[in-house]
Length: 297
Image 1 (spheres, rainbow, N blue to C red):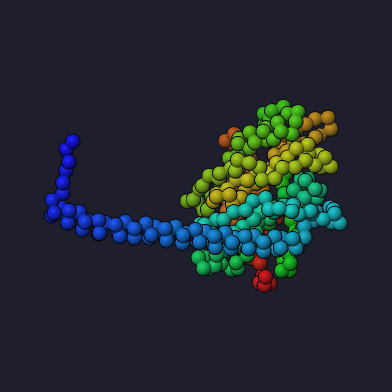
Image 2 (cartoon, rainbow, N blue to C red):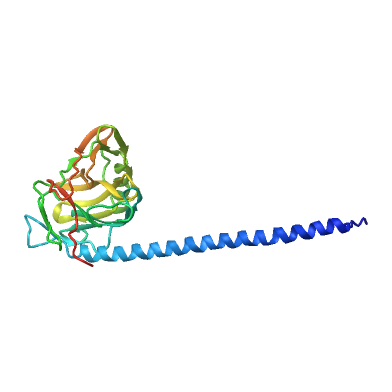
């Protein structure tokens, strides 16, 4: 067996290396742990802030009154939970929720509303809370907010049209839901900001709201969202299986929740569009958006 010995000089050099390398390695690990702990703390603080903001949104949206003009006494029923929660970093939105109202429980929606909170330290805007409200009703609707803002549509929010070459409706809700998802992927949307900016929208894979409404002639329906930033809905696509006398027909309608110009195509052909309209607080025909008047929390 061969045994190796360190010379006294080599042993001294080795000891010095240990002295210098050991503390450096330990200090590096401690610095990494400190950074991880700080990142974890920051994430926890951010999560708590967003939770608090979402609770404030729930309180605000519960005070909004929505009704159909042709059924003023019925009143829109607020879906109790937000359909989507999101942030939008490019717009400095640090918390947001999307809500819906229907005339009947789990029925066809008559309106959607985004409630967005802006990080004023990153993007000073007119107010920290913004509402974006869109009618999805084939009739007229009106809405009242607790800060005194009122809005009424001047024409139907959506208009349903036949879906070309639609499949034979499935026998069960599960099959029909798969068919609606397949049909949604045949639509494509884009946004435009002026003549130089054009961006394709990304369709969210799952519907944000599904329903049936026998009184409205809807066997099954779903609302799909297309987004430009994350899951912030820019355009809304409604796909319904409607009953007309003894027929079952696949129909679609489109709405939007943005001041950008939007174009929606089916099979490469334009089927719906809206112009760019940047004017917060102005009342448009089928939607509106405005900063909340300061009321205090």
